[in-house]
Length: 231
View 1 (cartoon, rainbow, N blue to C red):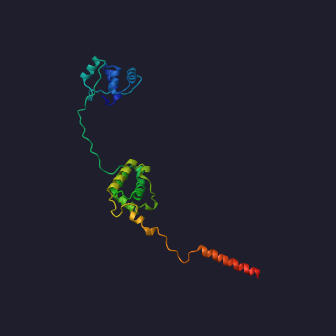
View 2: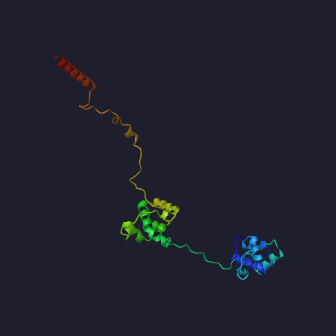
View 3: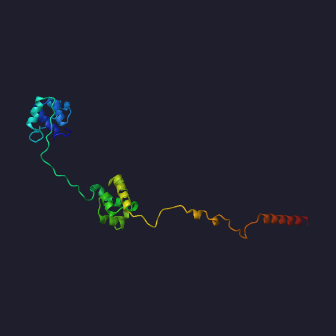
């Protein structure tokens, strides 16, 4: 079996001292290396360790040991425990935050409120391990340390993992209803882009320059200047 007995080294000490099992059999049962079991038998290892009887603890039976002593190729089988432990219910509560990290939670809450306003208080509580009162005080700037709070990423602070943050953000995005008035940026219809009046040149104003008139005026000015020189 893949499960090792309780206190493998102490069990190996007892089996080496009180049975005729081979080193390989003891090593296979205790999940140790055969050379380590040999060192225990030679007194080079596990000095000062008191042997533990696997029979008294219900991990082996006397018949199982005798059967293995008669056949060196037989491997001991760990007995199933007769004590059935009830399954531990999953605790539903705020995330535990180490004492050394608790003073950083308001900064993480401020970061989440600013960068992910779609997150609900329940999501922030799961990520940071705080209370609704603290979240409300940070959100309303009524926290006792609100003037010195600096937004800090909770992932960088070690309060949650990036996977957990992404999961909460995606769930909040799915729960947030879409704005019915906004349908996204779209192209203009063909009827608008192919209207003729959009491309017809606008009528010229009276102040627009006429090239022929400009040249004619320049000739007139030049003729008058020549006449003045002759006089």
